[in-house]
Image 1 (cartoon, rainbow, N blue to C red):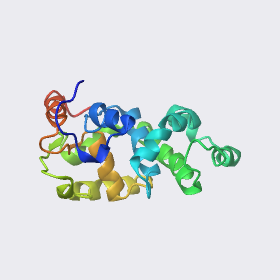
Image 2: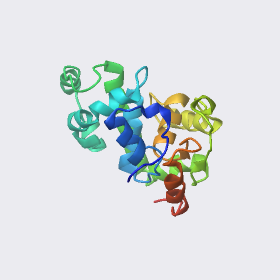
Image 3: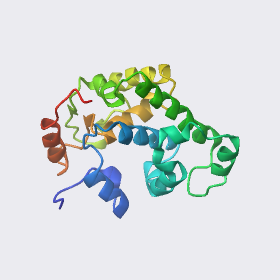
Length: 201
């Protein structure tokens, strides 16, 4: 996709960030596995910028077996210690262990024959919210929906899912379209939302 016009300012001019803005951020995602991976990665950015994690995404995918939850929940202490020596990821014990904990939470949905995607999307009524913020200063840090989802995820056993992280996740996976008014990517994301058939399974 060729983008003509002024993008959201947060992506700057870094080619990796610009590509992420143009082709990933804000586009609705309904696949359980993709949503699980993204939620885990967003938790890794706590206290950091997203570009830091984006640059390490391929390393995370390799280190955590493609975010295969069935494999992750079997990681023992030796595997955790090995991960903490991996320079390709954020070597923070709490963050590494959070991915294992979140994998348990994710698998609990499967065990109960629940759709992780439907659970998440239920917090926006199974329809992406379409915002039209005039500037970055107008975009909220989190919303009541993000607070509610954060509490529900914690109740399900997930961590590193505070409301700010959760709202960043919701923006990224298109649960809310927060491309600024005037950003050329806003309308394509809105059109994608119109074509969705929710609830998803």
